[in-house]
Image (cartoon, rainbow over all chains, first blue to last red; front, side, top):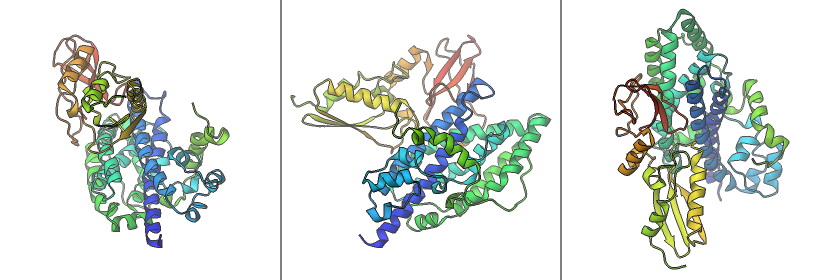
Amino acid sequence: MTNQPINESINQLLYALELADNALIIGHRISEWCGHGPVLEQDIALTNTALDHLGQARSFYQFAANIFNALPADQKANFFSSPVLQNKIAAGENIDEDDLAYLRDGWDFRNVLLVEQPNKDWAFTVIRSFFYDVYNFYFYTELQKSKVAELAAIAEKSLKEVTYHLRWSSEWVIRLGDGTEESHERMQTAVNERWAFTGELFQMSEADKVMLAEGIGIDLNAIKPLWQQRVAEVLQEATITMPASTWMQEGGKEGRHSEHLGYILAELQFMQRAYPNMEW
Amino acid sequence: MQQVTKEQVYEWLSGVTDPEVPVLTVLDLGIVRDVAVNGDEVTVTITPTYSGCPAMDVIGMSIRMALLSRGFKKVNIEMQLSPAWTTDWMSEEGKQKLKDYGIAPPVRTSTSGLGLFEDDAVACPRCGSEDTELVSRFGPTSCKSLYKCNNCKEPFEHFKCH
């Protein structure tokens, strides 16, 4: 094997992990509402949505695990920093979707910072989903054209689900923004506070750039204006003021996370870390 | 075992039902994409309804059990994501069964529009009235939404157009 295909495989792996981690972490965050929703129907709506994200994460993790298992041994040895994963790999075992979700350490997660931000109140939960759903809608629309058939198929499948998510979050932004004085104020606060996490969605990581050049990934700069337009339309309908452009947070795609990710992983990974290989 | 035809396998699959909507068979749902028989080995290709649908694992297991009990030595279940499953593939018989079961069947060809605050006009499966109201686009399973009938006042589920 020459270096070129290995590099391409690694970039594909990193790309798949970006997509998988985004889906897993937002899915986990949304699932935290399970049993705590303001009314039963909305509790159910969020649980359904979380399940869709989790299903999408599984598809991408399975894809990523296949790529990883096909890498030469020297590439695999220290690819992930967690000792438990390294031991498994050193023993010659293949890894799977569960290993990628449960056994990687925080700095190996490549999700954007937006999705790991806390739920706080209903407005914060809704706006995080809204910003992400608009992005996801255009992202998956484009990813359907990927020259890697498996990624295109996951995108085609996911887009149908994301369309539902986007309608749900858009409608809630409008309901709250154009609702009572208090709901309007809370929605405006949430928009202002979360705005700084939207820039990273369109920042091209090294893997993003290589995948775009290969015709596998998509051009985030091309979907940015679509995202801005849709967000502007819904915020206007919601009588919410769009924040002025500001300094944007970044780092998630390179593994530099906010303090929140550690707490998420502590809860998400606890069982497999404390009781390895347990099943139920 | 004797050489089994593809048609025979399909007939056996018509006895495998969805664990969450037990009136529907996997054929009614339109999730069986292909069957390939090779001696005492059979491969069934299915497509998931929703990415995270927990019923898919059970359905795969049910298909496996049904075919093993017919004498196959090896049953492979393959997942195919594309083309993505749509309720357009649900059989007419399946739609009627849903209605008889009290769930409003999908009413139109699926689309992926971005329209907000739009509801489908869904007829009440109990009294037939079209004076119904969407309660939530998400229901007790991924594939269903919640409605109420303003005529007979009963709540009901709608199998979403997807």
